Image (cartoon, helix red, strand yellow):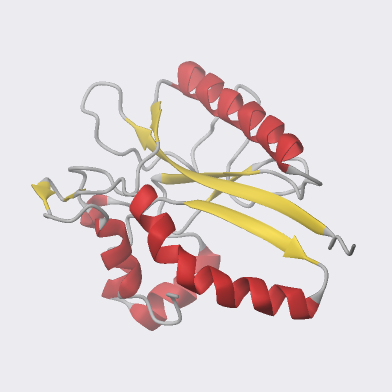
Length: 191
């Protein structure tokens, strides 16, 4: 029996929260540790990166051989983020959107995201959404295409399990996943 070679990497996007106001903090490019480590681009030595918006902190595992290794790496990263929060006076939250912070109040993106902002303008600037990304490496190209085609059918069902963003800009949207509405507006994005 043939068992394909697979690997996994996981990225989680966190909200950095002010402990008093509960608003998002545009904190990511500021110093996040006693060593003055700046969170800018993820590298093999530093597992955190800023995303498009400075209120989003992404933690990413390295490429892992299996789920157990990925889980261990993710737990380590989560612990480190909580430690950084205690030292630097911020809280951490994980949800598809922040319930009341306004996207217009957040700061400018890193240079690597500016081209995207220039291209899609307002659509990209209001993209104050957070996610969980699971990357599966599939060695066999034919199998990879089969997996992608199968996943297109299952993704709406997975979205139902992952609903975590009913609020946007202080309002109940009436939707379980307003994050998916934000993502639908982006060019070159979707199922």
